[in-house]
Image (cartoon, rainbow, N blue to C red; front, top):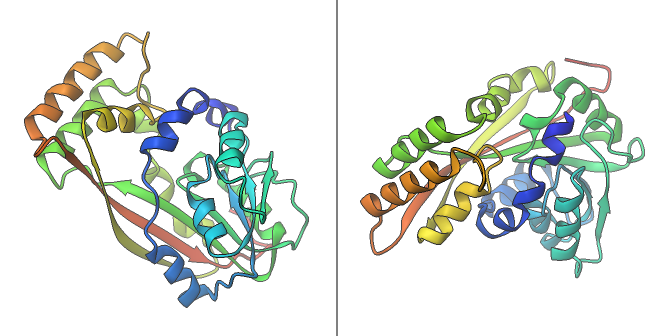
Length: 258
């Protein structure tokens, strides 16, 4: 994982906690039905951030290693989830988790694998997984053209975002077959939505690592344009973000590398 990607969310933790979407309950239903996920399974949740997906696993009864390289995100996640006794917060990366070989039944990574060095992460996941363990990669993919609001929001990001095109997760999902190869994998897609007033819409924008913050020359014009878009499309003082939650799951062969 490149250093810039492990630190770039440090000044966005509060907005991340408050405004990032969660994950549909159907994701765990899928893992139970298709992968045999049980409460006694041990999970390594990689790049766990503030613990959005980690929480679902803990609520399922799983023991979870929440592996996160960003100190601010990791500390906030540990605080948010401190009442779960089966949580172990770990300072580590996707490429060097610090976990023992063959120690976990599942490896999960939610909204994160596009930051990884995929070849090294794959080898590390295969190392820490038990035989027949499962790897699960998840993204909330914001729809960019399904409504007028989302089309204009996408244009805002393309215009004012610092490196929006370069860090979009689709660069990784486009080669997901290479990550799992030669093993087979499955994909499922679920619907997810968020509704926000203007404060929430601004917070959702500023939770993204490619959105310039106050002091950057793009910040003021970006926020002015966001307010215009919001006022044009809000209904009953709310706008809606729509997502496809994409889940990729399969098994890894330790001897196979990208």
